[in-house]
Amino acid sequence: QVQLVESGGGLVQPGGSLRLSCAASGRIFSINAMGWYRQAPGKERELVARITTGSSTNFVDSVKGRFTISRDNAKNTVYLQMSSLKPEDTAVYYCNADICKAFYSGSCYLYWGQGTQVTVSS
Image 1 (cartoon, rainbow, N blue to C red):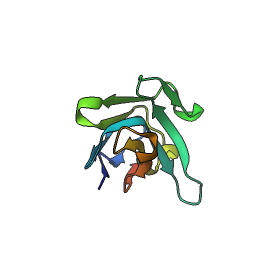
Image 2: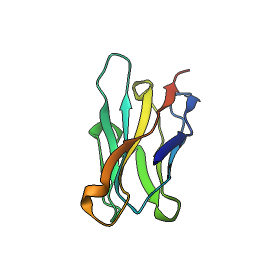
Image 3: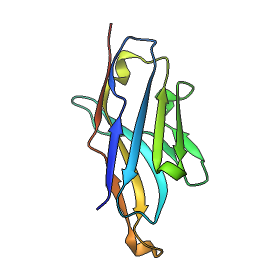
Image 4: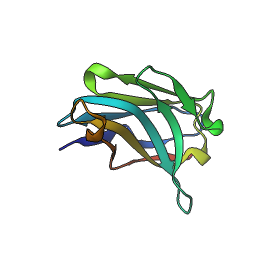
């Protein structure tokens, strides 16, 4: 089975930085796009950042210039570097990945991690 395991969340003061990691493991033939979502209490889950196999990226407007996303294909890992954090960045952050178990497209599914809490507070 395929698993996504996130790490790196925690409590940080406003203006601080955190780096989230998400490692995929299991039966993996290839990984297409990978991304980070977040969900704050009482709000819907939103896309924060996404990176394609060719390393093209896109971000939600509220994090542009503060967050970067990268991936290490050799390690099947995606990272989210968060800087200049604000209280409104507080949320549970989830990674997801479009993972293929074989060479044909029908073997590809979207997987989610379990989530990691990020709290920005003084």
